[in-house]
Every structure is written in structure tokens, then in C-alpha cells.
Length: 381
Image (tube, rainbow, N blue to C red; front, side):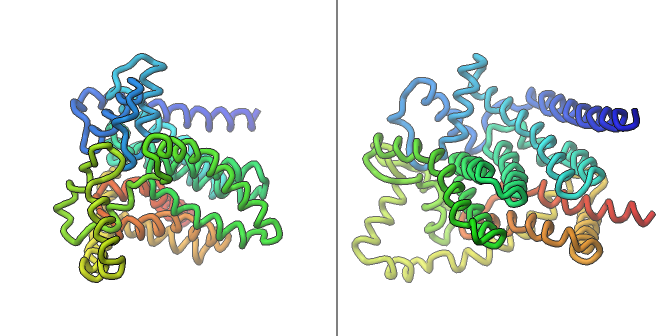
């Protein structure tokens, strides 16, 4: 009876949190009147998908997210823009469930409950769960990758690595920088079991390739080029003047590539790569500026957590770091594993064009560490 009561309480807690999370996000949809920023492009691409007009789809915009919007709109017969918002509301709710089970397996149930509650009320996560932007779905995918990646490393089963590769592949179609997480798992596979490393890496890459292959073949058929997409390329090689960001969104007449990419490619062919890098100083000056912006954005993200201002954020984060690194040494590797995701991704983002929303998908990672600090404080009281 006691065991059943415990299970009931856990289920009741999760059901209530998920219900409040979803209802809150749905209630906010009436305040969203127009697509936000890049959301306009994703809504337009989704409409092209639904009409079968693939000639207007370029290699610049990621196609996974507008493809999902179009599919959702076709199945449920809803407006395209509303479909994008509803999808993000579902992803935002799913984020709570995945984070809860991840934290429960990773740390303990107490921390899982703290994490679910904090993520449910975080205003940044709430907001991006009601936009047509990628961040809502991408945040869900990041925590899912971290969860499935940890399970794969624990289980050491081929099917888990295959599924992880497929998830990474799909995440890449949603946002190209997700590919950087492949580095984490390729290195960890070797470190975890070097005798089976080749087999597990093969399964990981196979799952990745099977998901990405249709996208590659589409680009090949549509434009006659072999490419994984050009979303990150112009951001990486862009000049120091970030105010000219709008230029990279302009496409050639056949929609095959960015006008900016074409001009850069022509210049490199004429003068050589090193001459281009020397002339434009590559991203050296912008690199320091972007890292500064990333670090300044992170504390402000947590202003959205009720009763958790910048001081308490740093205190609980430091307390959580102390708990994981020194107090409970069994959590040390888990702490470092969690930090690898924002560290690698933000290092990549800082090379490119930085916006505040680029740091939002890593809020759940930091909340997990904060919750270990809250848990440690609770044990002391």
C-alpha cells in the first residue's frame, strides 16, 4: 500500500505540473498576434511545404521545424501560425516531463521535483513555448539528447546509440549547431568502452545519417549541390559589422544559396582563403565581444525564475557546483557532463551572431545544477 501511495503521489505531482504548464502556455497564445523574428520565415516555409512549392525553399533556413509545423497543420487542420505555437506549447510541456525523469535518474526524485517546478514557471521557457521560433522545440531536443546520451553510455547497447544518432540528426535539421554535440558522444564512447567504440560509433553515425540523408538528397535534387545546409556558414564567416546581419538572409534568384555566401565564395576563389581571412580579420575582434555578450546574458535569464534573482542564482549555482564536485563525488562526472552541453554550444555560438535567445535552450541544464544546490541546502536545514 505504501509503495502504491508513493507512485500515486509521484504521478499526481507530475500530472498537476504538466497540466498547469500546458494550460499556462495555451492561455498566453491569445497575446501572440504576429510571428516573431525568424518565426515569419518558418511560417512561410511551412506554407510552401503544404503547397508542395519546394522551389522557394533555400539551403539557408533549417527545414526540420517548418516541416513539423506543416505536418501538424495538415493533420489537425489548424492555421499554420497557430500550429507553430501549439507545437511549441507541447514541446514546452514535454520539456518538463523529460527533465523530471532525467533528473530523477541522474540525481534523485527530490531534485527532479525542484527542477520540474522551476522549469514550469521560468518566464523565458514559458515565452518561447508560445512563439513560432525554434527555441521551444530545440530546448526540448537538447535535454532529450542529454538524457538519451546518458542512458546510452550507461546501457552500452547498440540500439540506444542508434536512437541517439537519429535524435542528433533530427536536432540538426531543426538547428544546425546541434551537430556539435556529436563531439561529446564520440569522445565519451571511446572513453566509456574503447573495445566496442567502433561498433557504437558506427551505430551512432548510422542513425544520424539515416535522418539527415533525406535532407541531403532533397538539396541535391532541388539545386544540384551536395550540402547539409548553409545556415551556420554565413554567420561564421560574416564580417565584423554585425549590423549587416540582414544581408545574409538575401537569396540568389534560384533560392539555392545566400547572396552573401556567393559573394564570399567568389572572393575566395579570386584571391584565396588566407587573403580573405587577412582582409576581413575573420571573427577575431567579434569573438571577444560575443563571448562577453553570452556571459552577460546568462544571469539575466534567471531573473525570470520567481524569487530567484542574480545573487540567489549564483549562490545556488555555486552551492550546486560545490555539492557535485566536492560534497557528493559520485555526482562529479554528472556535473561535468551537464556543463559540456552549454560550454560547447555557447563556444560555437560566440563565433557567430549572438542573440539572447541563443542562450535560452540551456536554461534547463543550469536549473538542474541549481536544484542540486537547493537539495543540499535542504539537507542542512
